[in-house]
Image 1 (tube, rainbow, N blue to C red):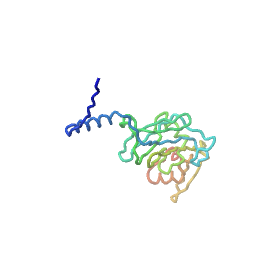
Image 2 (image 1 turned 30 degrees about the vertical axis):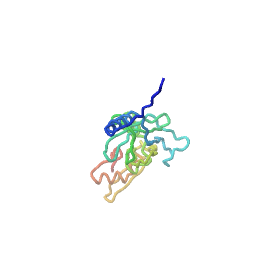
Image 3 (image 1 turned 90 degrees about the vertical axis):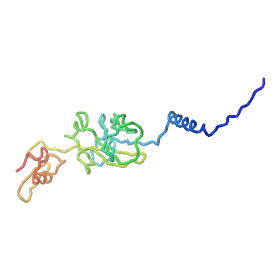
Image 4 (image 1 turned 90 degrees about the horizontal axis):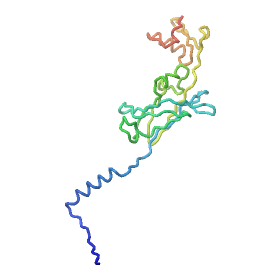
Length: 204
């Protein structure tokens, strides 16, 4: 038996078919992306130093949301585990899925009966330079660590023992019964025509 070799020669008219084949092949081959992730921990910051020290427990079951600052859209969510830790590695299905690109983002603890609403009367964000709501604005470049330390609110239920008091130049005296708002903050809010929560109910 004689074996015959036949060389395959591609002509110019074959090129469009080769390109189409390459495109289809690329669509179905497994793709890898650069690892981008946001991770962190929600924890009870008992000594208010913004660091999770030994004995400071994480908070489980809280939903962390991620907002794209450029579009203002929510793109991903995660729930803290038994240790209060969470990881967001890709967009949610409703946001199209896929990796999270580098950029500017806002991470926050969601509300809801099992979210921040369940804690806000007794706990307060230690890092509250941006908002009294637990949130963080950050830039993502490959990966980012975003923690949410929350500290206990010191408060008094005794109307005769406010946490702080303040007397303004007009003689208006105000009291604050927790350490979230100083009595001066309450005073200034009243002078602007507004009230600040429960603290403003006691004014003399």
